[in-house]
Structures are given as C-alpha cells and as structure tokens.
Image (cartoon, rainbow, N blue to C red; front, side, top):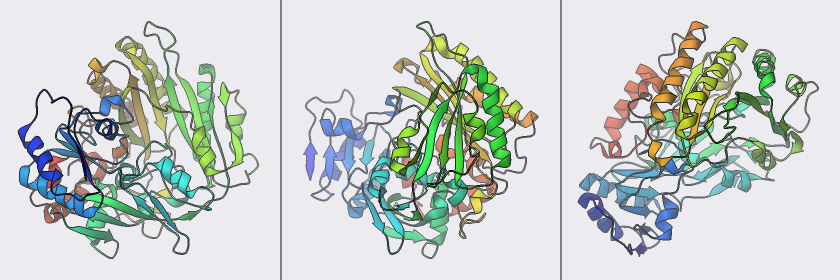
Length: 495
C-alpha cells in the first residue's frame, strides 16, 4: 500500500474525514492506495471531464479489490463520512463522483475481458468507453456502450445506457447479464436475473443506491465494419435539416441505422455575441454495406463540414463524433418527448437562440440541445427487456426520446449561475412540447433520462426517472440491503 502525505496541510480538515482516511490506510490491502492533497496521484484521481465537477476531498482511496471496497464501506458506516465513487468522471453534477469527504477511485478496476465462446464481455467499473473500444477492436464483437469515448462504463450503465446501437439491441442494461457488487455492509456478492434478482432490477437504472459495483458482464454482439460521420450545416439550412430528421424518424425501418441531432449556438466574437443556432447530425450505420438511399436527405443539403466515412472500424467511427471533446466548465439537463415534429424542433432552435443571447455575456461558450430519435420497439429488443426487468425505464412503449441540454462556460465564479437558466430552457421546451402533444401523459416517470439530468434545487427528481411503482420497489430493496443508509452518504440520485 502506498500512502502519500501532503507537503502542505489543507486550510480546513474535516475531522471525521481526516480520521477516516487514517483508518483506511491501515485497513486496506498492500496494493491499494491512499493519496493526500498536493500529490500528483491525488490530482489525477479527482480529475473530471469538466473542471466544474471537481471537488477537493480530504483524501483519495484507491481500492485494489472487492475486499478493499468492503473495508472502505465499513469505515464509512462507522464514521458516517461523506464520500463519492468515481468510475469515469463525466458527470456535470457536483457531489456525484466528487466530494469534500473522501473520494473512492476505481482506477484499478480498469479492464475489458472478452469471452468469445460465451460471447460475453466483463468490464471493470473503473473503465472508460475508449478503453473498451480499443480492447474490442478487431475481435468482431462489440456491445451496447457509450458513444462518447470519455464516458465511464459505470455511470452510463447504471443510468440505463442509450446508444446508437439501441435501435437494434436495446439499452446497455438490457444486455447486462450480471454485476459483481460490494453491498453497504461490506459483503461482496453477485446480482443477476437468477441471483439477487430484486437487487439486479434495482441496479439497472438505480446507480449507487445499493452498493459499489466492481464489474459488469454484458452480452457481446457481433461487430462488422460500419459507416458514420458528423455533418454540420449553415444556419440557413436548419429547417431543412430538422425536416430530414423528422422524415428519418417517420420512415426508417432499419434498426442498424441511427442518428443524433444537435442544435448548437457558438460565440462569434469577444463580447458575448453568439451565432444563429446551427444544426448538425451524427450518422451511424452498423454494417459494411450502406443501403441505397440511406441518409440521402442529409447528404442532399449542403454541409459546412462533413467527415462521413465507411466502411470503417467501429473504433475509427468513434472518432467522428464532432461534438465537444471537453470544455473547462459546464452543466447538463434533459427532457424526453414522443417522436418529434419539424415545428417542435424549430421551437428548440428558438429557445437556443434566445438563451445564447442572454447567457453570452456570462462567459457562455457553448449552448446545445442534442436529440436522439430511437425506433419504436427499440426498448424491447432482448427477451429480458420487459416493463418489470429494470428500474429504468418505467415506460418502454411508447419509446420516449431523450434529449440532452448542455451549457458550456469558462468562469469558475459562475458554477451555479447556469443552473437556473438551464432549468428554465428545459421547462420552456417541455411546455412547447406539451402544447404540440409530444409529452406522453401516462409516462408515470421516464420523462427525463437520469444520465443527462441536472441535480439540485432547480433540477430533476427521481420520480421523473423511475415512476411511482418502480420507485417503491427500489426503496424496498434499498431498505433491505442498506438499512444503515451508508450509500446515502454518497452522491448521485437517491431513492
């Protein structure tokens, strides 16, 4: 075990967290580590995709195995120390994978193991999707996974897991066969459809409410060469692109074809002036032979940029995203609707335009709304995907289409400034969607995809994700596995 002592003391050390760090350094294995502030390892461990998601913990604990995690959770239970668990660190919500207590880094749980005979993939909970892409490249196998290489496997999967492969294969959790998990009392166990089935249900969408997952085992799916790319358009053609998106939603019957649309405003000068919103699409075809006419409407519109390519490997396609690779600070939010109309997408364009004008002077540098049109039936692609197979989604038919709102900005002093505006644009868009009949009145939850949602006073509520019936079952499971409320000392959506 390596323990790095700070060269400079923290200005204020919470006694409980500090004591817990000291206790942990003597109760974990020789291969585990405890890092204190002002060490390189500490700094690397608390890194996030967004600087605004970083908090400074009293220490970082890096377990090496399930027994280490058990010892950590026992210490948490005894000391009631706030903590966080970081898998990939892509969240924009403070307190989800960051903390001022102590920070559990799953960096040593970083691996991808393909079993070609069983056609399964075991992935460590500290793995990012770029590592999975690379490990599976050339094997002719793949899985339903995050489209952004920087996203972590854990948060993506435990939130549900939507991807451009969802049309053909469903959600990531629909392809999840089992998880290895350390329960809040420190016991390591397995959850699957046949072992701890109630816990397995709750974990599929329920994040870290029930313990710390150490490994996921997924169903592997065949992977051939693909076609794909990112196409962006001039503002004058936004209406034409919106019409093409809606036409694709209404007419596509090939589950191997998928897209993500993005309505974006960018700064054009130093005084907070933004461009008129532009539309872009990320196109994907999961096969080596592109059917004649596929995506023809999008190619018929002149593009400002276009990196369409194929047939290429899935790994090569993952580099064609064209979206934001990283910004210094930012915040996400979400909404879901029934299938879009051109008029509704114009409503979204209007909202992005209005808010970019308002927020430009406040260091905003990127405003976008991404829409993800999935096919009818896409959430019932596997035999195990039923309305009662997972905590999320509470509604599988009709398929509610998720959208992600993102505000990127530069000024650290404005880390909370953008919460109210992003909540307001979300409310405005939902109101306009409702007026056009695009909000499913019987959703009973599922109206927001939790992986995209804003937390806090202005943000979402767990009822929006799970619905009342599923939420009751999740709470029953939580009381059974965590009667002392250990996991309530960590962030993420609490049920």
